[in-house]
Figure 1 (cartoon, rainbow, N blue to C red):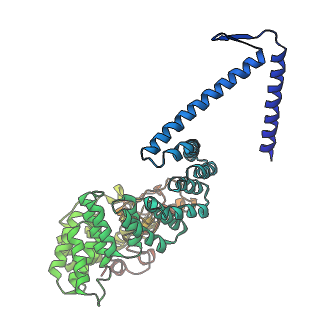
Figure 2 (cartoon, rainbow, N blue to C red):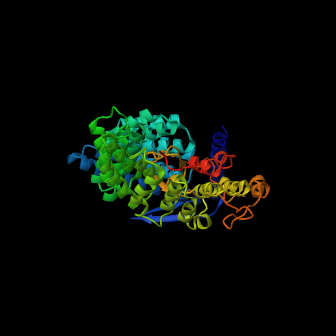
Length: 508
């Protein structure tokens, strides 16, 4: 309404201005004499202005007529659309201007303006394969999913833009959490453009979430053949998928093929800890301890891990503690300076009740790397040595607020997982879990935990500090492995020997 009123007022103002100008010109004295071929014409000021305007109009009409004549000549020569193009040139110019204005508005974050310009461009151009994209992206910018979905459905109907429409609908379904429909759309998009990197990644992630391991391996192979993945990364991810496909290998009813997939996963990536663990268990399922030992040793030499020690203990589940210390020399001598090796050796010696050797096995870890596991083992050692309860409680107090050490952490979102998985449970990224230390928070500790060492008292021994070390808190939502020894077991009134026997950290 306001715009219409402004247009009316502007028109009235222009008419009034022209009338006033004509009246002023009619009052001006003088004029112009024009002599051509013996003819003389005298024009007043107003007549002169009108003559100039008429000449300009005549020139414009002659120019247009010339253009029409050229279009007619092209039509006569066989160009059937020459005349229609000539008449539609003005509409086309307006349409492309609206289209460019819409793209600028979209880049500026003005979704509503982009949609309006897109619809205007469609009225002039009749090119939905272009204008619908502008409308869809403008609607997405505004959060108008219904309009965006309608635009994408129009794009699906056009051969040239079918992939764009399917991809847009797939993203809409992913935003809504409808992964089943998104997976179907991702498969269609992959069929239309198998070399599209984003589509490959999305399809691979959705197939992994749906446990379609066979389909995921086919997608990964296509991604490798398209050159989108380095050979070593593709090989590792193939191992991850083979491992996931064989996830039920420890089931007694598992087929030979499933066991072979676990072994294949370990062959493809020997440094993939879960693959080594599953391959070793698959060998143990058929009583092949020799091959299981070889798999664990090779993986331990690459990356020592507590899960490897656990499955190595399962090879001889009934052996006594001293025999186990000797058999584990195969691992502890492979990487003697690695922190995991020191912790494993200390746990074995605690189980064998050799507490002084267990303390020597820990080395300087309580000072250089005081994780919760290290400090808990120190509490078990002190308890086994017969130290006072205050000393044991002091170590346990430090363990309560100490860093948890390496865990399965997502490289993408840094979420901590209690166990390895092919897909991150938080951000749903594929193959992003690494055995590493999570980022520690810099926030201050609660006052209660800072005062705990003073409450329980500081005992004898040079290993126990008299005040609490200000260790950072673990990140919110962090899930950790449980300490090998509980506080109730260590500070119980049992004799030191019996309590230490219960404090074994080797999983049998």
